Length: 489
Image: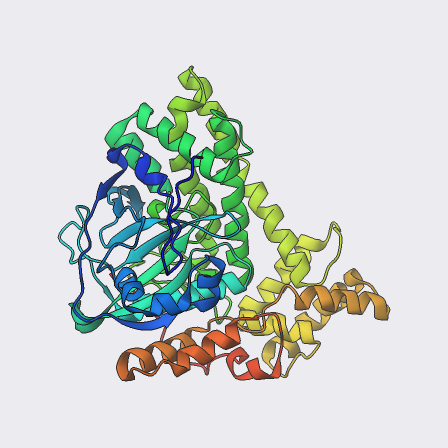
């Protein structure tokens, strides 16, 4: 890929390869200024990794770039076009409130989209105001950084800037702009747009670009291999979600990035009580995107991706369908392998044994039966400190524990090896929903970011099991009210 670079005091080194695609894929935009931008939070470690100067980003020119008030040197400001199946219904979409500044080339040569979210209206806004409220932007900052610390591929958050002007939803809310980084913002929905609004030529251009940018080891023009690699990455990603109890909440096809990163943290949340039917999103009325359904929805989304590639897979239409079906059919087993490998690690089981999957399923059934806290139960098992909760006092757990201990082996060496594996696989802390809400309320209602800062510090090393994390590791008090999240649009 040809590289163009530029420099500035802030350290911007843009190479705008996506903007060199035909304009069919995007719309060029001008800055859409806000009234009184103020820096709310800046991710200094991420800035340094990207080759950016945090002090310059805090300055007048840096703040103008992060607010969308001015284009930084070398930027090519565009809104990307895409479509998406939203709760099963295909809709033409696009960046209705986002602006891609460009692709930052980091000191290690890696390429990162720099996108502003909440930066104002675009040609794809469909009547919306193009703005975002502070609370949802801070939520994405917290959750995406927590996911990164957990070792899960994800977009990341560089900064949140308050705008000094309100946005109107059900109430008047403070406005904000989030600066998001990503390997790219190419979505399954981008391919659906290319196929639906364009045709084979546009899909081929996008596929060639995707291979060049994300899958250089795939041979040029090998679109079956492209499909296979996207399937593999999504199987791995969704398995990782399930292993930590992450509920995305809105797995529309426009929210599936072909790079294999988690993208778009709207109504997301983490499990407290283990229940595969858990739904947090206020708009997911029928549980389409429930926690336990995420693997199946992943496969459904990938089938939609495969459909867009059909003209490229083979000259014969029937053979093309067979090739696509063969690749998609592998997803369930691929997902199972990634998930079971992860569950073995969470339970300290080295190697493979025939009884492993049954042991895992039995353990999860115990959690569900006793309405146990998912993260806390694994952590208690990891620490060898089962408490007096109904789960750990049950006869069924005693029976299961005997089988489990037989599987991991006897003797101090086996026990220590299992404990080390479990400590590196079971987080002591996650961004618990009540802690996230506590941080958001303090920041939005009182302008107090110290609660969020303490939470982020606790989440920075989720596998540390340090004494300083104790208050953030504790489950919430029982509540009769179901936790609900909102898209924040």
